Length: 289
Image (cartoon, rainbow, N blue to C red; front, side, top):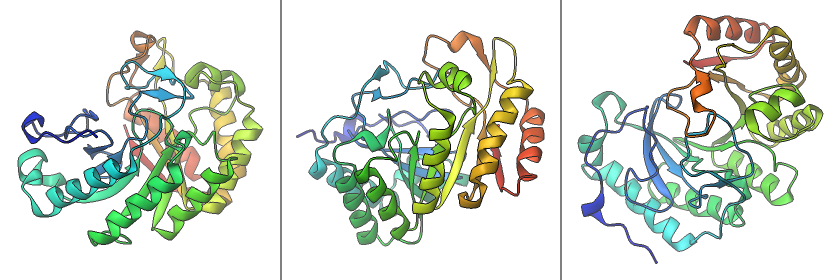
């Protein structure tokens, strides 16, 4: 069993431009300062093998491979999370590692280096996390989030897990970077029928409060064209009754994929215009340029 080595822990301040999974020298648990969450997010990485069933061209995971999560050491996960919560709440981690204006725990988030719902222990991991949150007095006070590409929502165990999130003051952040089959293939490197994406998004929103998360950027010097924007808006329009809102965000950290030189940040004004069009659908929108 791997053990945390306190002497190996880095000593620099965390910031939103670096979401290193090694920030606290643990296998499954890593704290980050999240610009979207607004404080410290405690990440749960169920994909320490850097494997994902998608390969988004803006992904910041090093040595990303196509695949699924490995078997998880649930006892180690529980130990790491319990000690991390203790350090954040009662130790000096906040003072040493977190900027003063971000010294608050905002959420615990299943995220990490791949698709968390691909873990064979996804359901059990939710039980471990909710137990640790309850013991530390955080259950019901902060969010338990699942950050997912939504591709496995049809699996019964994934649906059960998402339903459990609702009971733990949870919510889902469901990736939707494009609305057409062609652009989904270009951005996420998967062949998906947009109608299937819409169905899974609607199902997810019925199981648990759900926000869409969409990353927009310039590719080869061009922002998404009007046809692509309309396709994206169309999916949102058909799912809006089951959505809590939309997170629009840009590139905060450099991609570690081969396409990285082709990507560039869009100006905030571009995202603001898209946000205005999205709000006309009756949806809440948050922007992280």
